[in-house]
Length: 92
Image: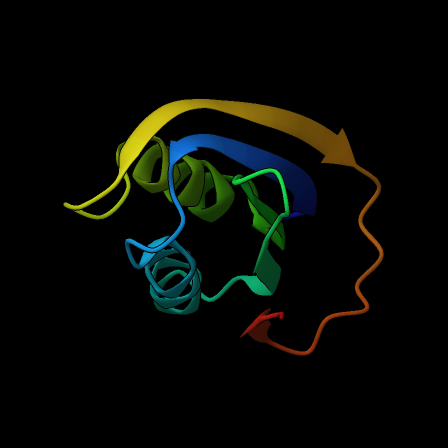
């Protein structure tokens, strides 16, 4: 199956609630590659590459988030697959 790549910005109460770790663990469990980081505006940004179905499952999980979070919305951009990631990581 041909991989896809998405860049997502998550708005809401998503910092200080374990959202990056949740994003990372979910991506690892779905065998995606990419990264996640906090933004200065209080949002979380992430990029993921992998098979369409796994990426869509990951996005569905991000819409819910971990229990302490309150996701207000996701902005999703499709990007060209670059295949440059070896794993999924948390960036600081």
